[in-house]
Image 1 (cartoon, one colour):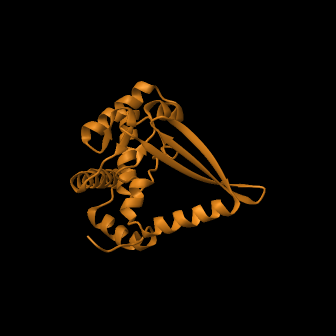
Image 2 (cartoon, one colour):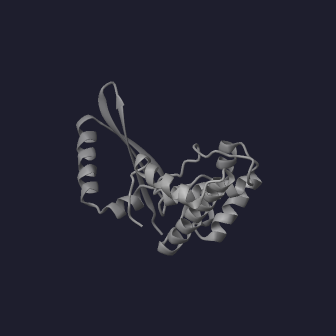
Image 3 (cartoon, helix red, strand yellow):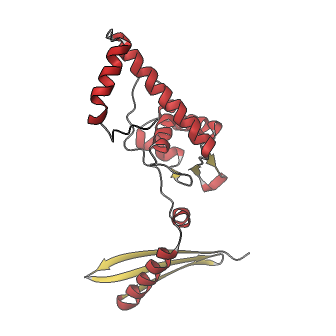
Length: 196
């Protein structure tokens, strides 16, 4: 079987554009450095090609790795559940889409300064719930269809609503008070959508 993979990178060296091409095939790895006008020509050709492709195709070609730097770990719930919850939030916000890769378990453990077994538990939970798939040595990626998205949305919105109601009751707000406050402040935060 014949296998080819091409990676394309641009860099500037002394104000000249250079193009680095990594050509990997089943018999080895070759590197090439193109400079000046040839690099510009190849770049323009690649941009024209990408402009003709549908967005979904480009999304499949350009995979992103989900970023865990913004997660805030707390002591209220197990860390592995917080990691899974964070990934669900990113899916709901549209910041994680099907095909996005997740860092390796060791990378997450190092990044969050947690035990690798905790990261493994998070991956197991996410795989069991169906929104992360792991393909052997290829790593793990987000998998979300309409059914899984609806389940995540329902879970997170119900959780948020229950927490809000509990907080309101703790300070003795009545249902009427809460509705009045929601009506008053709705347009001041977020996009103020009125849809249901």
